[in-house]
Image 1: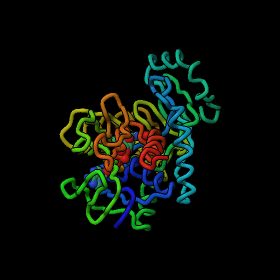
Image 2: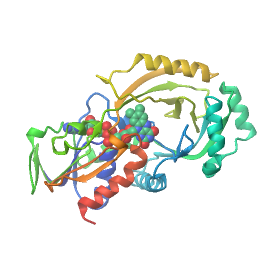
Image 3: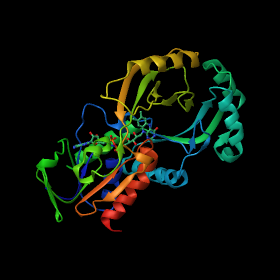
Image 4: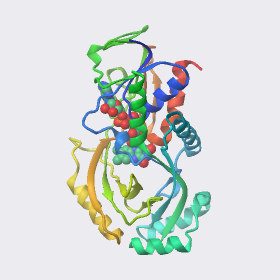
Length: 336
Ligand SMILES: Cc1cc2nc3c(=O)[nH]c(=O)nc-3n(C[C@H](O)[C@H](O)[C@H](O)COP(=O)(O)OP(=O)(O)OC[C@H]3O[C@@H](n4cnc5c(N)ncnc54)[C@H](O)[C@@H]3O)c2cc1C
């Protein structure tokens, strides 16, 4: 099969890049092999928040990334006729007096992102949560329905014979300056969007990938209003129905991607203290974040082989940074 671009990986990086390339008239084949449900994009909370909680400052370059992300996800909604972009407010509960003081010092600089909590909301919070150090309301923030986006995009690719579930194995590919041949696919360029597996990519061995795993719980909390996100030590993000995504943690030293029972117990202890309403833990999910030293994203053409490129290193902010970076990568390879 002849195609313009072979893309390895259909997490949020491969999804956004294939969308940008197709939108610009190029043909693609996407190879994505599920290694047992550890795709970071399916484990993510997928929240776009210009603010850093609990540091109470703005996230670096949020003014570049978030507007572009909103534009792109709205475009995908129209393209696929689905609803994936949800606007929310976050109730951020202060853990202690230090957090409250830090907030007071930063308030002026972030006031555009703050909203008053009205009487009904105050009453609601007092009935559902335990807290003694106060709460603030951040608005707007956005959430992407990642599972719906990734599933629908994959279905679109499948309907147009543009996806294969085969794992891309480097020794099976013939790659030279003119193009790539792999598994019956002839492409003029291969673009690696492999997520954390990128650290083993032999073409990009010099990129300083760092290991970082994170996990989340899926928690059923019927009594909570799913139009809000809630943040204390953990974040509760509406998922579907009465389910909330609850996460997350960061670990740099580990030998496997098995759920950490001690973390789940810690999370349950936090929820027991924080929530006044019943909840049930339904699932526990884990993935590696594709991170580099200094959290620098990778949008690059191989320095010596013109038919090889990489989009990776989306770190902790794949859903907010991905749209702009995928657009940059598409422009680079399409030369527009
Ligand atoms: C717990 C947690 C919470 C997070 N919360 C947020 C958040 O709120 N907001 C946010 O913006 N980001 C968040 N992130 C970060 C976000 O998930 C990542 O930045 C993003 O998902 C990375 O996307 P990716 O496409 O690069 O990698 P992935 O989503 O991991 O996708 C890579 C895909 O490539 C496939 N693949 C790899 N090698 C091959 C091969 N050889 N052949 C075929 N297929 C292959 C893999 O199987 C996988 O499906 C979070 C991450 C975690 C773990």
